[in-house]
Image 1 (tube, rainbow, N blue to C red):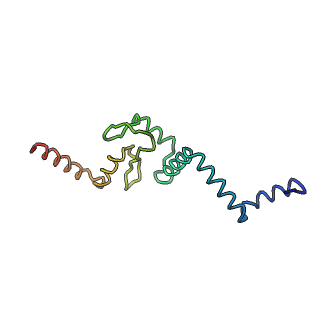
Image 2 (image 1 turned 120 degrees about the horizontal axis):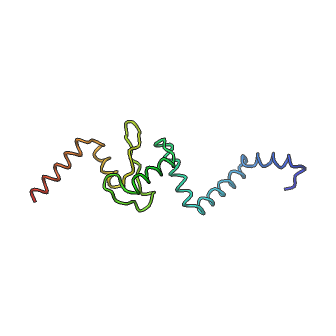
Image 3 (image 1 turned 180 degrees about the vertical axis):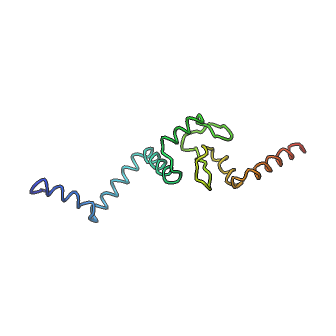
Length: 132
């Protein structure tokens, strides 16, 4: 498209994304970018999740990762990759407690973060082991 002057070109470029044709082109370009950059997409989603869900910056999350040496805070197993780490938090206060593997995170969740219940489960397991 030929423009009379630079000002007309700028006006068109600002207006174009608002047109239906512009919106479709923009969506296609965004989809192509996501397909070509899956690792960046994963990282951006992680950053967004940390900020929205836990009010935690990615840098603070990385500090937690380093503090725990890339291991689960409960069982001590190494995470295969950072995306396998679950961000554990207090459901009442929202405060982040640490990084857990999916199994340990699920265990806390199933026991409703109830310390007394966890202790009862531990006593039960010890008791059953003693009977075997």
